Image: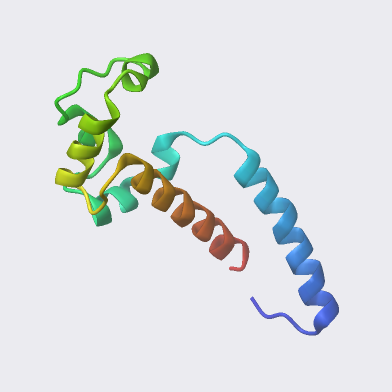
Length: 107
């Protein structure tokens, strides 16, 4: 994308701000954030489902996932990913998701 002049840049940035509000404030599933590309780069797995299915936890619902002991989840994440904790993994996935949205906007 070519931007000519300050006014055009300001207009583009205002549009980006509006678009990002929609993306950031919208609800996104873990599968959106931890997509195939993210999982392949950062884990031993090709998908979030594969990662969770291989875990020692029985997860059949969101409630099951919420009941997992945080220490045990962090140990699994540390063993099978490039991250030390589940929180760190989620944070990086969120950052990459937003960065990809910004990049797409400027194509």
